[in-house]
Image 1 (spheres, rainbow, N blue to C red):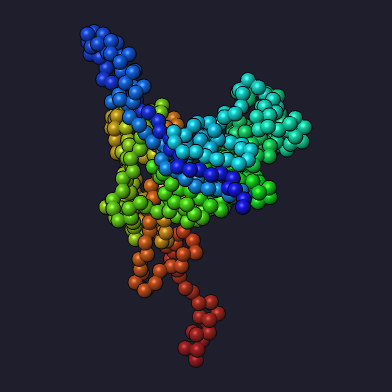
Image 2 (image 1 turned 45 degrees about the horizontal axis):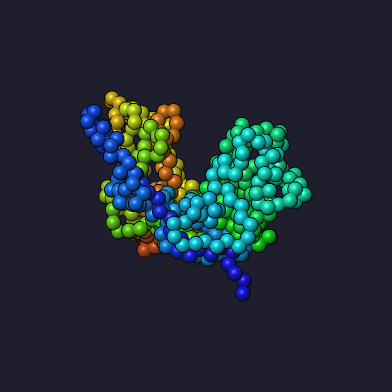
Length: 430
């Protein structure tokens, strides 16, 4: 009996979140706070301090992955994906449960992980190889392939602290993929690279799994890549495993609205260092909040935002994707005439009227970004999903075939060939 490559049993990870006490308003209150500080610290160590709370990033997570499986891990922001990968990569320890990995693991979790910034690209290749337990002659045999894949020949002997984020990721992925790991763990970090490099990375992961029988764990917001690359999927929601199954089934479950008949408003937290951020986005179907829309319905978005510095010209955009990850529509007010506030505001609402997009029945997802005239400050990928349902728009008793994601309203005109018209006229004269 072959043992699974990865075995996770009731993994849980808890973090303590500190709540800042109210600031002292007087000298007496400041002295009192200083006197109480040692006792507060003692209560924190005992876990009886009410200024902190436990946050379970993961809870009761269990699954098994066989050798050679390519598994996509998906979920909303904050679902626990990165925490799970860090536990599997032995970067953090679980609070409860255990994870058993059988084989040499290479992880690519975020830009900069595993590289020494003062060392050159060449030196970091050998450093990472030795960390993976490889001998120098094994690394020598792979060296040229790594450099060629990463496309850093000119900068091979430059300290990696001078690399751009794209160069960093190219080298990190090339090292992780070429140094013969038995388990490869890749987070959303590939989004930093350009489209051509992402395509090569996906092809390399596919080769690793199919040709070498290696196990791949892949976290991505690109549902098309998950469907294409992965045979299985794991859906995390709120730190728990909500669904295990084929990649198609898990992606469908992820994109399906959680409450198809109730109004939807998606709330967001402020990203660190963002000067302007979305607090809530709502989908309106024919003027009412909903997660379902009949074919031909009018759609609009309502975006509520806060700012650190009052402004007059917020910049908002969206991308509409199909369930397979195809990007169908995109729009933003940077490239078309846009209104502005009469005076700078710290809070505001943006209303976007999409009209009636010609969408066929199925699940669809919006991604959003918000910024100012200089740059984007807040990005939320695939954060609001809805369903288009069938409707007989033309009273013909039938609906279009679902051979694409969209139907297009087209005007058709019929004309007979000119010679046929002349013949019919001749007949009438005779």
